[in-house]
Image (cartoon, rainbow, N blue to C red; front, top):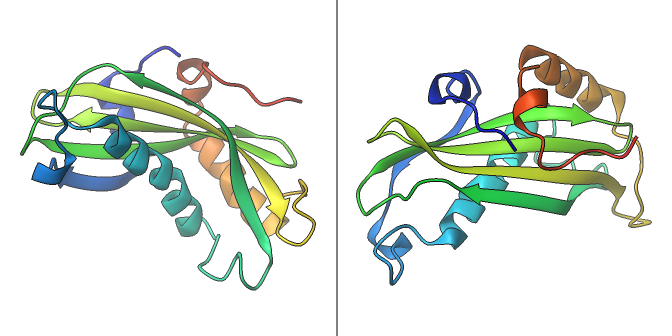
Length: 162
């Protein structure tokens, strides 16, 4: 995984803009890894919702995305009260899988704090097997991938099987 600049990351949609709360601080005096994971893993899910994966996607359509792999690089620490944002990008997809990335930006110091890559498989909740991403969601995903094509060179820690 090569790291983009904060200027590049800020071209991606932002899922979170917040400050590090007291309860996120661990014994080392910085934000605990579980909080990076929490925000980094929710960011792509929220973006998919904005692209058409409505709240009823799972209960009505009986479809979902399952995480099958992720990779996290912690490149800077966040301390109590510091402001951070989480930006999300969609790197690529196959008929049944999606590669996404979340970047946590330390807004106090204008640097990356964390980069997280995730590979999802699109599944039927009935069969619990991989199924094709429906066209009405695949189209917006493809447009998002094309809009941020620089991610293919930055998010290289994981890859989709073709």
